[in-house]
Length: 331
Image 1 (tube, helix red, strand yellow):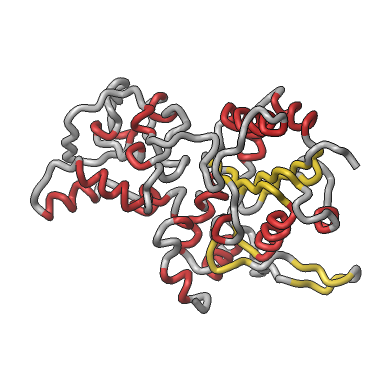
Image 2 (tube, helix red, strand yellow; image 1 turned 60 degrees about the horizontal axis):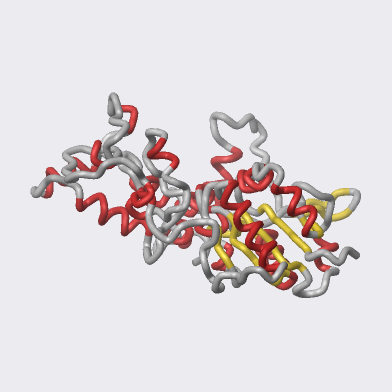
């Protein structure tokens, strides 16, 4: 066995963009290979669950976990890697706050499966649905069982650090790798447990270079309805819903700098208890209206309130799920 510290990375309920972000560190990925013994990374190396199960508890120094907990397999591996890892990092938005897969918490499992296998865009004339187990000649085959709702990693196991982003910025990943290297060399110390790493402690608005004046919004619009977009003025002041006021800094306000509104992929800023509630407060504070009917008409300009306020954060919010998702699944 190698004397190098062990590294693992796992992909649960997510799109795989976090894996690509790690590879996008370019030459820095060679440092990972040089410093660590990569013992478990299913998307990149051929290792099996049984290989991890055979390891001593705490033998993996660092595990990056991306993705939410959507089924029993995700939960099993989360507990397994928690036992085997000294440092477990919730890596990326899906692991830290649920991200886009968490929006499925608005629907019961049976409706999700029906949509996937019985819609106009699905060629399934025999109405075949997946089975959790199947008696094949080689033995019983099983597939993971979907849970009623998606949960974040920290809702299932103890997490040491959180690294937000959809995906995290490659330069921030490289900075974290450098930090771990310095810790191994005795040149630095790890931050306090529970810290957010590879991100800032302020908001996207504080990073944004656009000018902010008196905000008096009389209508919310989609960005394609604003022509042309002023390249220097705050996007929210132009009537485009921008999530910068509630979103954690660390991305260098990339979206506003490119002329697009912040959609909140870095999650709640420091001290924000509920992301959607903070955004609702921020939006309400810039609406220039007094009469209830007028206020309602302005807010109707936000076509998808859940997608606006909880696109990335629903699973980790105070709401967590639509009541129907719980009731229809015995909760």
